[in-house]
Length: 237
Image (cartoon, rainbow, N blue to C red):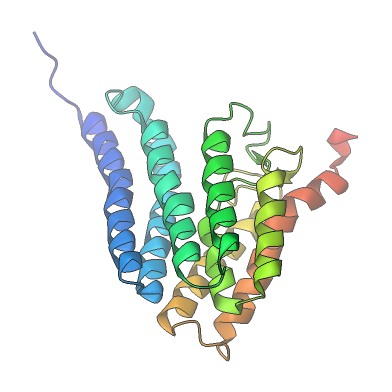
């Protein structure tokens, strides 16, 4: 006799369904990118980014591995993350005109190839739930590049350095799961999301305060993990 699904089973299934909406937002972002509507594309990617930030805590709270084991939430999350963090932003960078000629090809090959390897790296997480190496958050990087529009040589340098750093023993924080400095990390991540949406909404107006907010928050999120390695806790000494 089959056991009737419990409230916990149903709630856990809803979490999986919520995670899966990221695929819908990815498609909406891709459709906008195909029409070179970059602001709209990034707005959808910011929505997908927000979903990704919420679904993890929900999955752990409602124990989806136990209560909805038919669907692998980790695999579902990785599939959607590759689309929204890597594939669509790389396409946008290539089509935007920020990288002329061979530089655009160089960037999309490096980004997609290195990220595919990183996303299946069994050593991507550290003991404190941070990331070992740059976690392939190209959506954040490329949004900032659209906002500040640096020279193509600087963009190539940034892409090359970050791609290499994916496989170096450099720590990058998870704004929610990394416990150390979480009281600062999480609000900064929320601010980044707000500034990202604001910058896209005003079509990356260079005079918008959102641009400066993006630069500040991005710099902190990129450097915080490395700073934690340089400034170890007493327990780590």
